[in-house]
Image 1 (tube, rainbow, N blue to C red):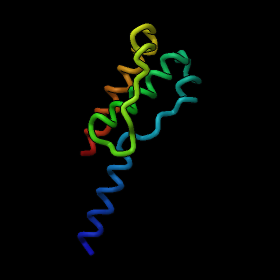
Image 2: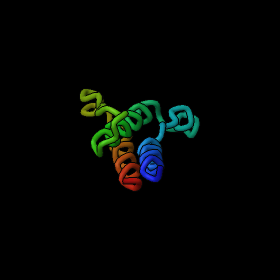
Image 3: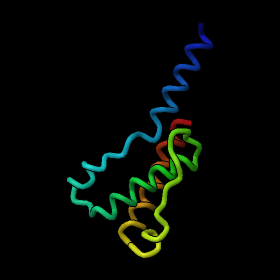
Length: 89
């Protein structure tokens, strides 16, 4: 019974790390759409890189190279996701 409880708690912690990014909230806060797109992609990539099983590495390479706002958003999202998920591991 204790073993099952430990497994359930660990599974919940795993799922809580790298929570959903709030695209609408970021746009409402005044962030540029390009930044928000990059942030969402970078957050997903950061979670994937650190080992979260439900995220994939996402980066629009052309936008990353040509659009500074997308790149800044991607870098911010990537860094925050890695910090969020690492904190619960």
